[in-house]
Amino acid sequence: MALADHLRELRNRVVKSVLAIVVFTIVALIFHKQIESFLLKPLPQCTPDVIKETKGRCAQVSTIGLTAGFNWMLKVALTAGVVATVPVWLYQLWAFVAPGLHKHERKYTVIFMTCGAPLFLAGVGLAVLLLPMTIEVLISFTPDDTTPILPPGDYFDIATRLVLVFGLAFEFPLLLVMLNMVGVVTGKRLLGWWRGMVMGITVFAAFATPSADPLSMLALAAPIWGLYFIAVGIAMLNDRRKARRNPDLALDDEEASNLDLSVAPVAGAEAIEASGTPSASAAVPAARHEQMDDIT
Image (cartoon, rainbow, N blue to C red):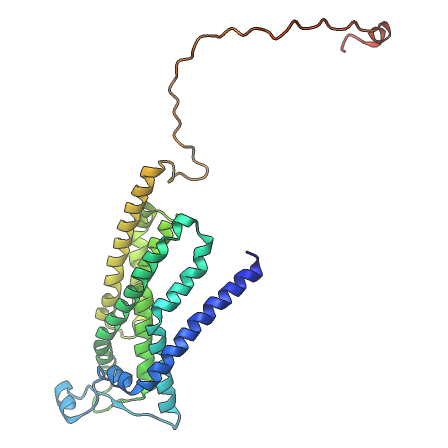
């Protein structure tokens, strides 16, 4: 395909993903009250019972400005649309890449679609479970004898960040497996990177979680550590399967393959009859003979 065709293909994939998100966003706008109640449920709002139970560690949700409620509704609906259409835009992403693969590599589309959406939703579920603890830790930094006034937009920004970061982080091991299946990286090399991967995942979790407590950081880092080593195991099993079919698959481009240098017996000589008596060479003319020197 020409470059213009690739760009048109990318445009079509993006348009389909955006249309799916718009449709689910409209559906989320219809049920935005229920979604908002679900999102605000982990937040300890300041009621007499909550103040007594949490010793004042609560927040007063308050909208500031006439358009704050409308903006809050749009954010809730749009995020719900993005999360609900995970299978759609993951498929469009893979469908754009798949034509560049070999025929035997396109079968990985099923694996990508089967595992991609559940992993993203698993990250979203973990973020929802950790959201109350994160909010509680952040509220604990409030000075004594004060009540934090929390706009819904600020709270939703934290919740959205947790949901998207956790969801995308859970896709990282799947990306490693897909790179191994298409031959970009081997399982042995992935295993050799384990120290750097563990450190990188830990640093990423520290920056990705909005709260400063180590529990939230470990809650994000530990599952990704486990998924990374599972991905390494799957990659090594896949390399072993490929090695049985092609022993030279793991060799570098400049590395020689193993050659069979054993000596094979040679059969005896076979007599071949000439097709005819070769004709005698013609005599060199005298004029030509006189012009030839010793070197010639």
